[in-house]
Image (cartoon, rainbow, N blue to C red):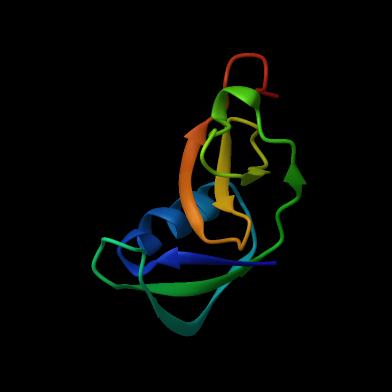
Amino acid sequence: MEIYVPTTLLDEVTKELTQEGVAFEVTGKKFSTQVEGKPSYEVSEVKTKLVETDVPTVLESASQTRRAYRLPSGKKFLLTDLNDNFEKLVEAPTGWER
């Protein structure tokens, strides 16, 4: 799968993937994107193999549909939008840890 990570957050995300033992590749592909009302920013493509899981209810957003990928330790989730644009890394809510 590919996820698209804002270049400003790339170090944080790749560090977490490395600590979790997740194989990944930063492809070098970069894209500019813009969200209405915000300045444009650059995203980098990252190829990785994470398994999609249900989004814990406590992490769901009424205004946006998300995808969730549990990291191998079970202690964190990587959240994206439906187009796999990175949103954030979050701690697993109570009851969702492994």
